[in-house]
Image 1 (cartoon, rainbow, N blue to C red):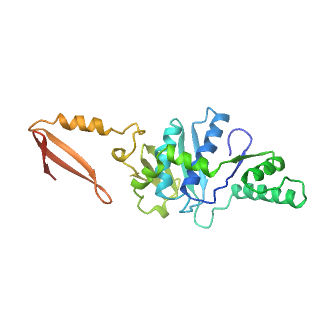
Image 2 (image 1 turned 90 degrees about the horizontal axis):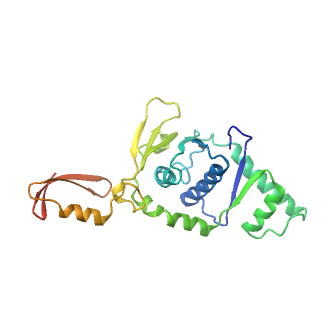
Image 3 (image 1 turned 180 degrees about the vertical axis):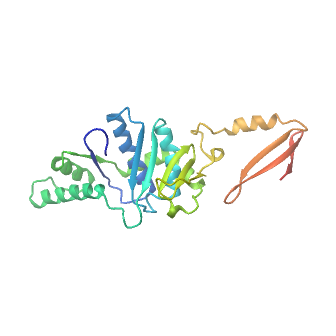
Length: 252
């Protein structure tokens, strides 16, 4: 972490062996939560990473950043910058290597407690690397985070940004939408809707409950024009209908 204060380093240790979107979403939220506690006045954050498709550069993480992350940190502006292919090595790789080497050295020198799991690894690492913020996040915490924020439901309905692998900069601009560029300082950009509020859970501020929709349907009168949107296989379609009592005559 680079800020107006001294640099800070973070290392996440987990008993989960899955290096996927679920882990990344949980780890990132926990780190930013800790940073916000230390820097409550922080208004903007820039994230730099490589373009690993299974972890960072994919529709699932971008959906997460523009929905759940935005709900958790509503006052925080976020920009994510992706390094070019084969140019992703950085300081973070050194942090992880330092922690692992320190624990390995302690074990070989018999100076550490017996390392048999993630918790004992963290205990040794914190003793050997006091200047690094080392956090333990268990697989159960990851599962709880994903379920609590209904991320599987959101991810099941998200749509991909065309030309994802050519994108090297994204910024959430509103709920479910991101602005994307081919590089950070590019003048041209596009805005893509990853998730429509109509198909999300009730936690979304833009979501309308089925009860409300049912009430609205009952108020349709003969002669009223109604715009109806529904989800097709890979897109959304809209129809204009003419109300006739309790039915709607559909016109595309």
